[in-house]
Length: 150
Image (cartoon, rainbow, N blue to C red; front, side, top):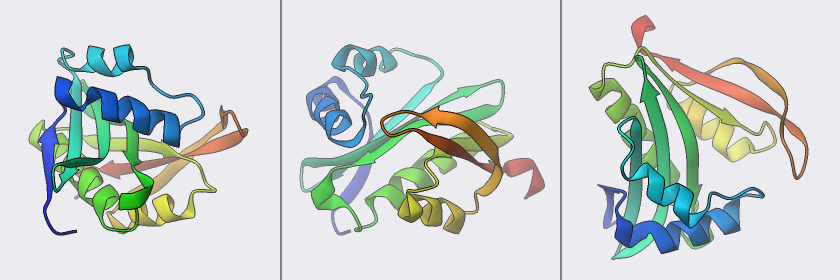
């Protein structure tokens, strides 16, 4: 997508991201929850901007050499344009930059587009979490990228 840039999440993004959370998730993060991540040392949150507009965001926490993705979300009008790929690649690069041993996330198996994206970036199935999601109920597919195996 032309004009797409990834920037660190900042206070100016929070209202848009809280709206995006409500659009994308049955159990959205609150504005206060997003704001708390701004001062969290283990948090890495990126915002995708396109033409000055917030297109999406992604966040992870890195602890003890392991990085776990919390959320990746893209506004509907920006989907299928490479925003999710750019955000995921941005997190992977930052995980490597923190010398993480691995990068992991959960995704609904029914989200075929997301599963295909993550697999195209080298993530592989490491297991499942039974009844992880609610609204609607579904297991979580655990996908991991093992940097030590590269």
